[in-house]
Image (cartoon, rainbow, N blue to C red; front, side):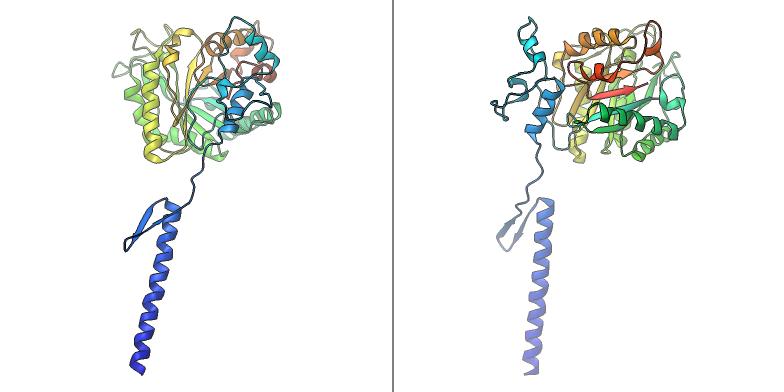
Length: 372
């Protein structure tokens, strides 16, 4: 009898352990989106991954384009095809110009920053006080100033959350050729980490900016893959200092990038997003002349990369608005931005920085605001 009881107890222990193991494996399947097999029986988890809110995405795109959607319009209609009922949209519709905004591109992966948020960024390099805020003030002052600007934008547009950012120039164009004749200088890793640490202090994001000089994007961008594999690190390009096509020294003529150059970067970033299971990256490209970016129509955003063309010319508010219309409004890509210069925008005959309302009234309203 004692032997039978011990055997029964042993069987119960085996059954109990088996049940616990089965629960653990089913739990793993539930959270890891995998399929697990038990003796020819297939257990499939039913957890649904998060999906993009396309209705909200389209709504925010139309909001940037100052378009009000009539209540009779289906919310499932793509943003670029919805009926526009705002005065601005009706004026455009009756003019000779086509309706260009919102730009018709792909939907992003889940976790996209834009158009759900507006990015407010400070720009610069730690080696130079002349290149922007980041090199002009101590980190604590920079972050305090940035937070102040972010608060102002939250008040100016309460419907759009603000994300703070640092745009750090990780490769700077140079007047001298350097040892390899490329007219560019790569920043040390401790400087890049310093900028990233500052961004993390305000729960923000960082842009690594590349000014290639006579080098190429293919040589420079992959050097930062270890940073770009992080969730809150993004990329910026400055065609002004891309001198390969002209062969000139940076600063002597305005440089240029073609859609093919930018598409290579988009594909490179897209692969990083896929390999590391990241939310979409934001790619910035600066522009204040038409030739700085050629063949804009062939720039192809992907679900993994959101493209922002930033008007970074300086001058009076009226001049900046005209340049914005010329190189941004009339040549849509996906999202837009504008740079505000604390000093250069105050040079005569300017009477002040571009007012926030004037910025928000641009077509389309910028999703990225950068201060230098």
